[in-house]
Image (tube, rainbow, N blue to C red; front, side, top):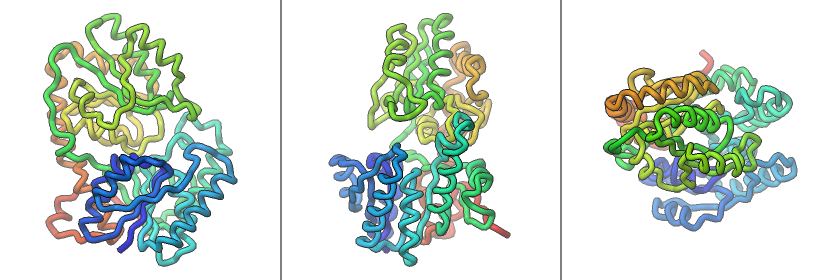
Length: 392
C-alpha cells in the first residue's frame, strides 16, 4: 500500500512522525512524505527510515488566497503523480488543501490528524470572528471526505462540532497525542542544587511566555539561586510573537536563561527539575509535556484543553488557571520550598507516560483506524484508552 504524509514543516516528519513512518515501512507499505522545506538532514533521516520525500512550496503562515490556490494545485498534481492509497495530513494547510485535493481521487483514503486547533480558535482570537468563520469553512471543505479525524483531546472534538466543521456523524478518534519514545526519552536523574525550571515553546504570548517570565521575576527576588530557563524560537510572523527586544530585556536583567532552538532537547531536560508550560494557546496535546514526563519531570501547566490531559493534579504536577501569574508562581514555589517534591512527582510522571503515552501504542491505534497495520489481540489489550465518536 502507498501512503502519502502531508506536513507543513520537514523536521516534524522525523521529530513527531518518525516512529509512525518507521512502523508503516515495517508493515511493508511504501511511504512518501511531503513538506515545503529543503532540509538535507531530514531527507537523509527519512531515507534511512525507508521513506521518500517530496518538496512542495507553501506559505506556512500567509493568508494570500492566490498562494493557497497554488498550494491546492500542487497537492492535486502530487496526488495525481503518486497515486497513493492513503493520504494522512497534519497541521492546518496540509489538512485543508490536502483534503480538498484528495477529494478529486476517490481511491485515496484521506485522514486528518488535528494536533490542535491553533490560534484562530483560541480565546486570544475571540475578536477575530470573521477569520475564525473563514478558517472553519476551509476546514469543513478539507475534512468533508475524511475517513476519520484524529484529535488529541475531547474538547477539540466538541469544538469541531460547535464550529460546524464536522457533524455528529463524522468519525472523530481521540488518541493520546503523538506519543513519546520512552527509550529515547529515558529517565534522567534530577540535577543537584536548587530547582531549575524549564519552559520549551515557540516564543508567543499565548504560549504563556510573559506569565512565565513574570512569575520568574517575582520568585527570583526571593530565591536568587533558582534558575528559569527558556528554550524556543522567535516567531516574528505570528501576531502574538515575542520580540527580540523583550527577550533581551529578560536576559539582561538575569530573569531568564535563554537557550536557542535545538533539535535535541534531552540535555536541557536533564538539567531541569520542573517543566513549565503556562500556555493558553489552543493546544492539542503538547509533545514537550510528554517528553518531560518521560524523563521523569513534574509538570506545571494550565487547566485548559490539551495541556491538562497529561497532568494528574497534585500527583505528577499542578494545573493553574490561564494567565494567572500569581497561581503560576505559587505552584512553582512549592518546588522551591520542598526539595523532595520534584523527585516524587517526577517518578509518577514517568509511570504515567509508560502507562498511557507510549508512542508504539499510539501508532498502533492510528494504523488500526487507517486499516494499514495488523493488530494482534494482545496489542489491542495493551493500547491506552482511546475514544471515538460518531453518530449512533
